Picture (cartoon, helix red, strand yellow):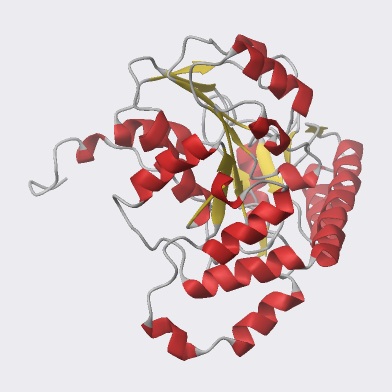
Length: 351
């Protein structure tokens, strides 16, 4: 605490990111893609002229937005980009959720949501998950200052289909509904086609997961031109040049290689299902997942002890020390060899 801080800074509880270890570990804790970016990305990095770095980037990120618009079948004016989806979400909280009524969100979801609420003074209320750890869309109150949820949800892994989201949007018309699709490429169904029918729908996405670009920081939002203009007003009141020119070129290259993208995501999903079955054989309760991670619980072994045991065997997973999740571990999907090592370590600890 410092006397120089602005009022309220000492009361913030910042988001805690997953550990980025210095030592060499099998890293299954932050939902990164285990495979490298598309080959075209490496080509961009080799050919990029350093002289470009003396110039400011395109403040409109036109090339990247055009590539995203083409990928998702929307107009370029319906696309917004930023430094990772976290930044895009932060701008959305400022643009849409500072309302008289509270924001509605799931009680268990991406833990950055309440952090943004505290930072920007947004009142919020939570909705408990259902018996199957699903986000109950029917429980969201239409009389809200906004609604936000991850679909598929993190860290539980369940995703709703497009028809279920459309039903929510038929009922909720007077506030922004933000669908965070960070993990949608691993088995979910995107809500992007709904933006033409529902002007209050904003869909966010990231290059960090399925595009293997977590270290670059690229995120985006797709919605009505009205919503995109709101984001641009906030962005241009904060930082007119959020996406650098190298990141933009890399993002375009990642989008262009569709065959590589499909092969990687299919491999991740195949490995996920194989791992789910093998963990089940070891007595774990494993939640169904449409993401690149699994949320698991063993009825006879404490998650905290398993977490420590795995770390001692040079395998890093995520343990959330919260009341709702302390009995669970979240395991990112790695390569087949990495998941084999995980299963071998689990067998050694529980048998």
